[in-house]
Length: 113
Length: 417
Image 1 (cartoon, each protein chain N blue to C red):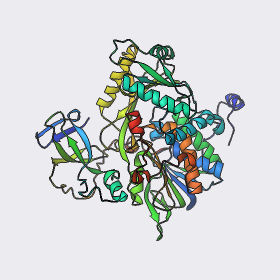
Image 2 (image 1 turned 60 degrees about the horizontal axis):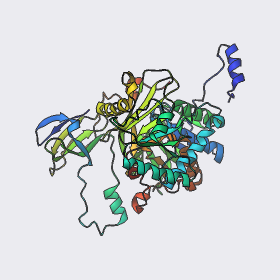
Image 3 (image 1 turned 30 degrees about the vertical axis):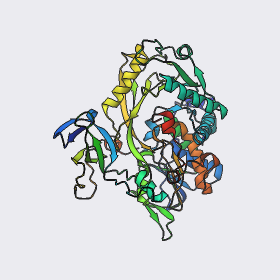
Image 4 (image 1 turned 45 degrees about the horizontal axis):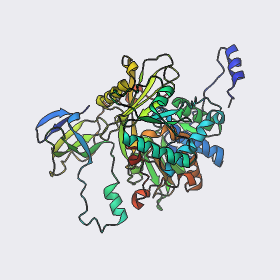
């Protein structure tokens, strides 16, 4: 279970209090009725699904009830930072970082014989 | 390939079982193949087998990052059924179920397919209406599925608690008798052995790090940790890592990778005769031939590649199991693990061509890919060999997210499935 720091409550709380809201920083087109099918697909369905740092929305649904954003490593599940909704994407030295000590099956079991 | 039979067992018994040999060869990769399949799970190995068997394409390599069957093929709860709502789903899952029925004979390898019946519990009026709609759709399409009263459900699965005062009361169930389970490792091993016998190269510990294309955009091969391997066609069948591989070809796909957990109990004597699923309270349980209860939990709510999930997810599932089957409350759990599943927004798979010529995608099987293994592999081989989808997989295209022709099993089942 994740421990998540809510930037509004300024407290680290258990994942049970939160609801994941998918990718952050996706802007709904203001001319939604006029865009092409390709543009709508890109806005509505296509996602980066990165193996590394993901920027995502969380909602502190059983706490303050507010949405905020987080940068998390999807290999280690470690949160790099959380920040309030509306704030710009933080600079995390740009390149996706993954932690070395992750318990993947390769790390635990070694190479197949 | 040495044929496995009762005579082979008897002969080897006399020789102290020293003559079996390896199931499949482990050759050095060639510099160039006609087809490279990325991902050595059941779907990828099966596709290589059917390419060789049905389409005469034997210059094929299956590249696997770890060891074959070590990903989601070895991590699922082995449930097989075909009682989906929409025709596109019924087509492919029923095609698969028909292949399951004869797979052990086809591969000369015992995959232990056991049609013990899959029973889906209904807890409320919504479940009942939804299941009856599924049953009617299935029967009109020639797929077996039937409605059981609570008493009939109890007769079919005696450990079930059908008391009206139960925490999760049961007002009926849908039963697909041809559904059941199979041995998941044997599926990977059986396909690997049969494919290797037909000349397919199975290359383990070979991680793809890039997909190369020529100036026209057509694929030319893959970069791996064992060097460049040329390929005229590339098939991606890598479950949770499908979107990572597609990004190597600069294609964004509508997939989200999430952890899905399962666990097994200590082994008990045979007591549980079928597979029981409850979508509403989220529990999946069957008993393996070793005697362990095999229990499937839900996905975590966030994207992850960690192959672990939150404890609260499996606790939630065990809560439900203990309420549905009170006699199991003191059973101890032995092992728990996670796999990474790639989930589409409509909870239906993607199998089709991609915007990159020569690159084919088989992905998005989400939380229910095991049951589809033979059918998916068979149709993926057809897609790679012919360059266009088989009639039975024609609706599973990547374009459906642009055209809007979704196959909305997510709404039909109300849960991931």
